[in-house]
Image (cartoon, rainbow, N blue to C red; front, side, top):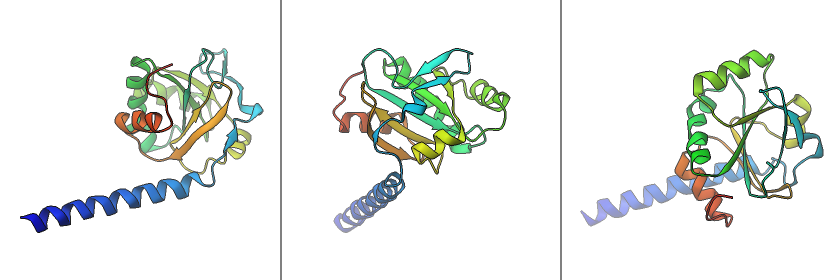
Length: 169
């Protein structure tokens, strides 16, 4: 029995290290430092102009998605939970051909946060090569953490906690 538990624990540890290694490798090519000026003021899906980082002085989680991405579809609801808990969350649509695609994605997923419309230039400046991607921004626009891939609500909160954000705003 003890050997089984030890083997299970070591397999879980190896699996977690593998996940962290892949995440680190993916994030190593993503933008670090300051959020690009070209991505600070963007048109929103609502027809207004949105800002990144979000106004309000807190840390902002930027969710970067493509409307055709299945993993993005599966993770979008996690953002609603964070928003309900008081975290500042913005979504940035990239890799779409028509605004209608983004609108359909938002409607079908129930995404209830500000959705900004990006471009290929912004994707290049952020070095986004996979969807979904996430950026945690300080109030001044410094990128505190960047990564790609599936993330649960708990995982998102844990990452915010790991960078020192223990409570919303």
